[in-house]
Image 1: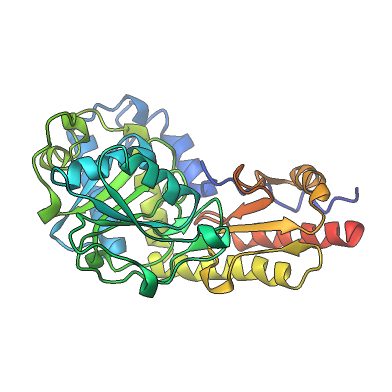
Image 2: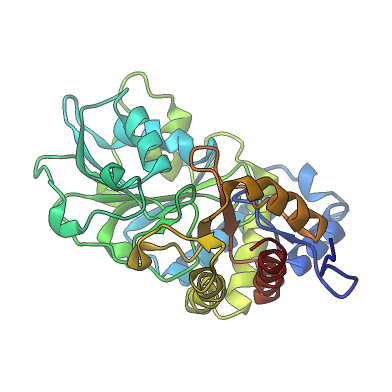
Amino acid sequence: MACIYSEQSGHYNFAAGPAMLPTDVLAQIREEIQDWRGSGLSILEQPFTSSAFKQLMAETDADLRALLEIPSNYRVLFMQGGASAQFGLLPLNLLRPGQGADYLESGHWARKAIAEGRRHAPVNVIASGADQDFTALPSPAHWRLDPLAGYCHITSNETANGLQLQEFPALPVPLVVDMTSDFLTRPVPVERFGVIYASTQKNLGAAGLCVVIVRDDLLQAPPAGLPAAFSYAVQAEQQSRFNTPPTFTLYVAALMLRWIKQRGGAETMATAARQRSALLYRYIDGSDLYHCPQKIQDRSSINVCFQLADAGLTEIFLDQAELCGLTHLRGHAAFGGVRASLYNAMPVSGVQQLVDFMADFEQRHG
């Protein structure tokens, strides 16, 4: 194979998560891993109760609030267990006994949230994309909402099947969103949500931390059986220090927030996301070998999922891409094919290198 990868080319990680980090953020981590802020101690050794680490948490809270323009009547929580833990914690924290919740079934991760939600409360699926094999999103005009629901849950971006909600309707019940894979990739109207939650290993650093943004009026005393460490109200009262938070992951998130801020914030990230995905979708749509089955208006700008016309070429494509410095392009196990995850740290040069490889591969195998 005449690989286009050379010393002038880069090595790009297209993994769905944990995702690539910016080189300058990695450099700062490398520098501070032994001596953080001149303390003589590694960031890994910092007590979470120290004034220095409390200051870091306050800075992280403030930077996130500024970037998303979070209103003052919302609390920012730094929790463990990832977004998957929130699938069960949401009904336990937000619902009254016997109360149900609405869920939009938009793809793989929405289904995970629904299955876990059903373990704790009645679930009403307001609409589903299953009849279209999750290649399109049900329009809000067709959502069958329950006016008595405790909340309505949506997944803003489906990493496995490459769909993304473009608008967030104002609803009569609290809107709850799993925003893990497109968090901080665009501005969002925070005031329309009761809860926003997102794991950090895609756009905000390393695995181990889940950011939960919750409106004050939804904080309530933990019901019997819910450990205090998983109570939104308790963690809000304790400023996310009821128990030891994931200190290193929180530190990396702080660095990523500054990196985003220095580059112009969420608007700049949104422009970059559109540029990256448009470059890749444009090539796919003009190709005879590659095909993206997702409805154009619902396509994700973050996780581009596509198939090869000859499925037998997929493994060859993935192996040769890796040899050319383009790693972790395998599609989700539930859908197969190829997936290029284009999170905030991915430069346009990485997508261009992928497109160049795809064109070369098509010329040889098309």
